[in-house]
Amino acid sequence: MMFADRVTRAFSGSGGRARRGGFSDMPTRAFSKTRVMSRGNAASSSSFAAGTSREDGRETINSRDSRFGVLPWEANVTLLFDASKSMPQSALDYVFSEGLQAIFSALSATQASAGYRYNLRIAAFSSGVKEILPFTSLEEAKKLRYRAPQAAGVTMLEEAMRDVFGKTDELKREQDGAYPRRPRVGSLVVVVTDGRPTDCHGNRQPLSRALVREIAERNETRKTTTFAIGMGNAHDDILKELGPTSFLFEQGSYREVPHAIRYKGETYDDVACWRTACDIIGSASSSRSGSPSIVYRGSIDPVACEDVVEIDPERYAIVR
Image 1 (cartoon, rainbow, N blue to C red):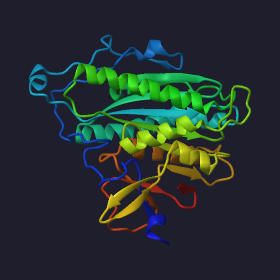
Image 2: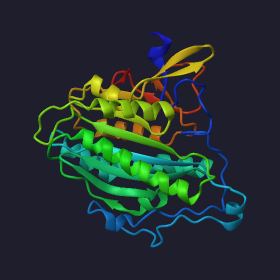
Image 3: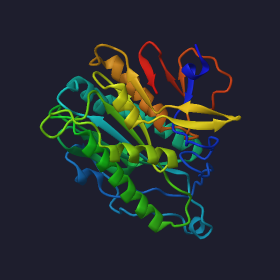
Image 4: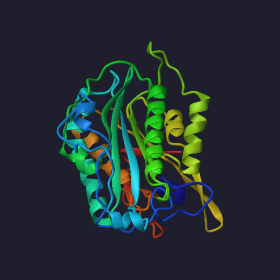
């Protein structure tokens, strides 16, 4: 098996060496005096989440830290799930009952060990976009109870991606306005889909060229890193557009950096399948370097970087 078939690096930018500061050039030192608050009241923002959140929607920071420009490494993570009628309801039920907790645990472990801060958004799409959790601090997201959306409707993926980018850019503008001297905040979008994009009537409709170019440009500039997980009838060409392959220049040559994988199984309605998928989402979302290697399970390559997302070659294919 060729080296490129065994080890690839996801979430890294193109045209340069992988950077160590996470999703962008951000410091990784933790500052214990920094206090994180959610951007809004998550419980009142959606009928799909219930619980409590902080009353103050503003981010606060210790005055001494603010005076010296000290801010923690931060990342805005969006989890986008296909909830069209072709998606097994049992899969959605598992994701929102147990799967999210596994993802939160992975994020929490990294946040605790490295002092990172995660702002998390969860959405589902079918005939429209349902915001299950607006951008909220990880601490607040863990306190809420979630109900799975009902699998129904078509697969309006174009609208969902534009919604994701719009909400991500809106939060980023607020963050830049509040702390203009902070390091650039990184953004990650993980998309899970089991089909092909359609229009509102259910007719197949490819992603527009404008959106495909925007996704590629966001990945190239590291403005927004996207990663796609395909199930069922999700085709490689769509997954490559959602998670486009970039190229990392390292040691005098370019290395492929795919951002998409596809489940190989014929059926994908069993709990084991979605437990694995949630583990992958958690591993990717909680990357310390922002450039985790996708390694086929059992691979023994000495140059794999510190963050490794293991993929079982019998269950998943890396999409290039």
